[in-house]
Length: 118
Image 1 (tube, rainbow, N blue to C red):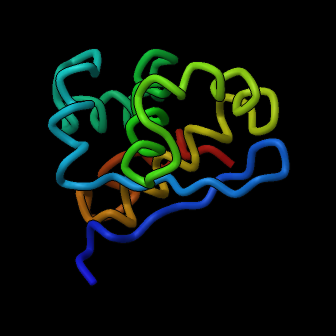
Image 2: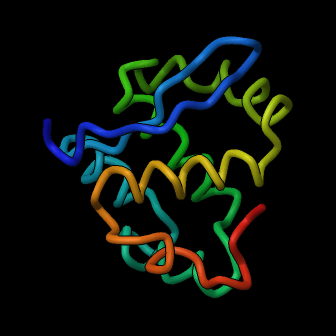
C-alpha cells in the first residue's frame, strides 16, 4: 500500500466518511487554495490556522479522494459536516489526513505546537 493510500475518518450525521489526499486530487485542490500551494497553506496553518476557505477546499477534495462524493455532491454535505464536527474539528481531521497521506512529514510541518487544535 502506498503512503498516499492512508486516510482519516470523519463522522457526519452518524455515517463514516473517508478523508484522503491522493496524488490525483492534490493538483486539483492546490490551485484552489488561498496561496495556490499546499506548502503555503501548511505555513499559514503553522502561523495561525487554516482559513475557512482553505478548510472547505481541503475537506471537499479529501472526501473526493476518499471516494465519498464527486465534486458536485459536496455542497449538500458541507452544512451538516460543520454542524456535526465544528470548523475546528474538521481542521483537525484535515491536518491528520495530510500527515497520514505522507504529503507532509509530521504535524509539526503543518501546525506550530501553540496552534495545534485540541
